[in-house]
Image 1 (cartoon, helix red, strand yellow):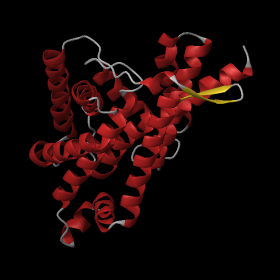
Image 2 (cartoon, helix red, strand yellow):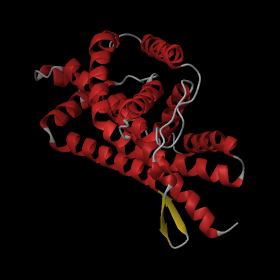
Image 3 (cartoon, one colour):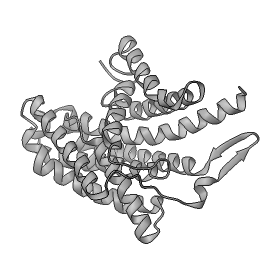
Length: 288
């Protein structure tokens, strides 16, 4: 097996992993601030993928152009979901939160099945079949563009949390819930904003992923599980860890498909998860 082939596969894995990382970043942000695990995260990603395919079918709108309106819509939906449904469960036992979001996920999957059926849908654009050539290295254009969009979205989120007043207020709510309430911050409003931002991240990732794979309703639970693996590998609550975990999972899946069989990619992902849990339970970039 040639070095060039392995290099091509690794590059493809890194690019796909960055999209995975953006998906997991939304989950990590929500957990890091709200302390609620969104068990409907992958289902929301699948809905975003369907939104991208519908906009393409109806208006021939490139998924990259669809990212902004879909992300804006998901921000509003995420804000409403947190403010109207999840906030009353914030102080309830964790099993109540778990059951609530699992129920939301099941409703989403079955709604997609009722509306679109089990058949796969996709987006077909000319550049999906094109590549950039660097010597013997071939870089898939669609994968590169998707990774670029993921990097831009992740960078925007990093800058928002670091430099904006709202971002700093959200971080304050995450660091000290009671202290934030004492100084007059509307904690539940900032929780809703955070859920909206996490939902916008998964919307951008979904639009990008629509260029790489066909979408079907059962993808939702798979992406939820994948997002959990990524954030645990990277470190729960760590934004940088989510991106790193996504890249590692993307590369491991790509190498599994090359050296063994594509159906073994989940085995490699969970093998990496087990290794991290054994050697560094808090995740690669997580804190104890």
